[in-house]
Image (tube, helix red, strand yellow):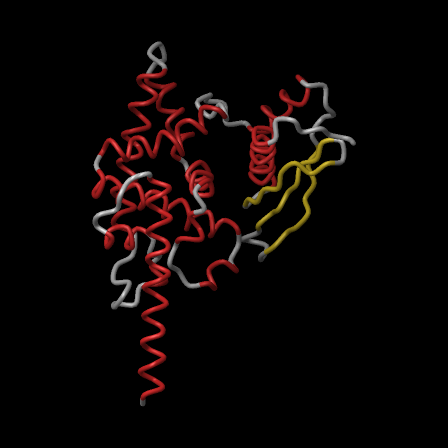
Length: 254
């Protein structure tokens, strides 16, 4: 009996320490004191980890709220930054900023995956599942920031981790043909034409998942997945563009 009680106490002590550590890391990322810890714990709780005790609610409601907050902030930012652009341009640009890929990258910038409470088995699923978990949690986190810290702090957070990186990656451009953009970039700096290779096919015939890599001068610059080759190639090209942005002094063919 005592050994069982001791194990339970150790479990709860460990859980409290992990939770405190995650909240302290969040405070540094947000650059603001967290007052309502329960809201931030909820924002980090995937539905797979809900136990009805320490983790009572999933982050899905906060995700709903955060989606609206980020959508509003992005719309206002684009409205202010591009005063000469029409509604159609702004709508397409906003879609590029708030899609799952963009929010997944934003979540990666703050190491969000390491902060989420979830069943470890989920990480064994395909990459697209991880992308959904991180992007959804990022929106939930924004919802928590808005509720606890206010709109000003939420706006600064979105500007830092979504708006500015997206502007640098030129995601406000409405052309989402990443293959075309990669080709133009390669030609502008006198590199070889990008070449795409299917490196894996998974799943039954009616539900295939393709993995494609893009190479320039024999160097792999991006790997993407999709339900068809065209989608996978676009994702690989998008990853390659991110590589160019993150490594400004990249030299190929050496």
